[in-house]
Length: 304
Ligand code: TA6
Image 1 (cartoon, rainbow, N blue to C red):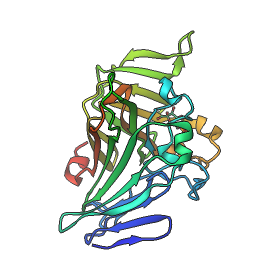
Image 2 (cartoon, rainbow, N blue to C red):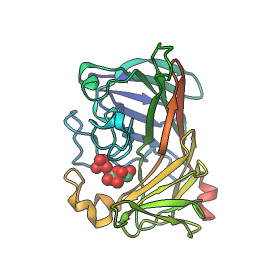
Image 3 (cartoon, helix red, strand yellow):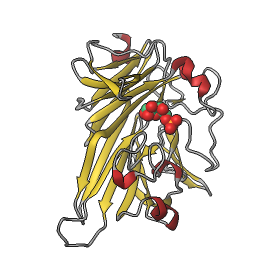
Image 4 (cartoon, rainbow, N blue to C red):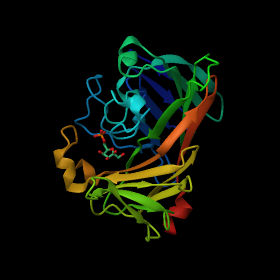
């Protein structure tokens, strides 16, 4: 299956018409096109702002930015020199290899290792690899984090990090519903306490909408979600990413310099991550956070 590599990106094409495009900058998936029974021609499934910078000057506004090693503003002392959402989304990753190329799908790997620039803000023993896999109706992305320390000292040279896959799913924001999140504890970042912390709430809605500005971090979520709207839907399964963030700023999107006009009406972010607490990874160990996005089959969508 064709894997077309250029200076700054790689394009994967499936014989059944689906495709995915990954920028080396941030290992950001910037396009995923897939057909369905309703759309015989592949259609774009991700939102990418027309004002997004794709030249490596700033993180990409749209697609799937990779968040590592901190989510939001850093809270861990080891992350204190990092900016919002860490450095993985704003470094240029290296092309590694084609991992799989068969009837079922095509899959490539990019890697990121400490560079002088990264070490100046995050001097920790890590290796990242990101595997993007395209199938006919499915896109999987897997983030592998290795603690490369060989130290046998005590206490161990543990790597502590958060990770999240910041999916901008193309959807009519005023009609989209996300489920099942009912009864989960969540932190509402649009409502701060007197101490400036997100308000802790319990989700009462069987299906969550984003008709008003939404920035909610759900804790210990089921890792199996449906994002649906009249005539469309995406299912999302994740592994080792116990939390999930739902974000849409609505009109607040006007304040975001690289958001296209009205862009907030065209997406919802549903982001599986491990962002409450930290992964604690001992020397020599590897952790993998995974997600699979699938186009929901037509028959199910019609019955919604
Ligand atoms: O994941 C949701 C969030 O953390 C929001 O709080 C919102 O600010 C968004 O990410 C975008 O962050 P960015 O740094 O890309 O502007």
